[in-house]
Length: 72
Image 1 (cartoon, rainbow, N blue to C red):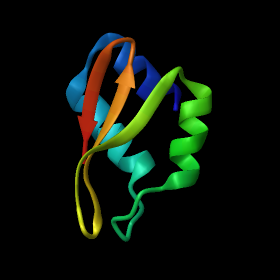
Image 2: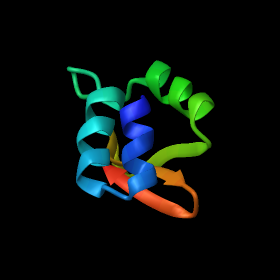
Image 3: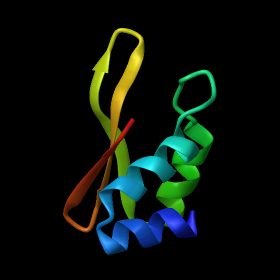
């Protein structure tokens, strides 16, 4: 989580995507709600779906300091 927060602070979109995919998407392709909730408590951010279909989230977003990072 420290590494993801540091990547967001640095504005490194590629690294944010890679780390967020590892943390927030399960091996089965579902949202890892426990990790999402824990990270939202850890960092002052909001994690939400940017795009979704009938199966779930396609692209996730992390709103941090007036910037939105996407992952997925």
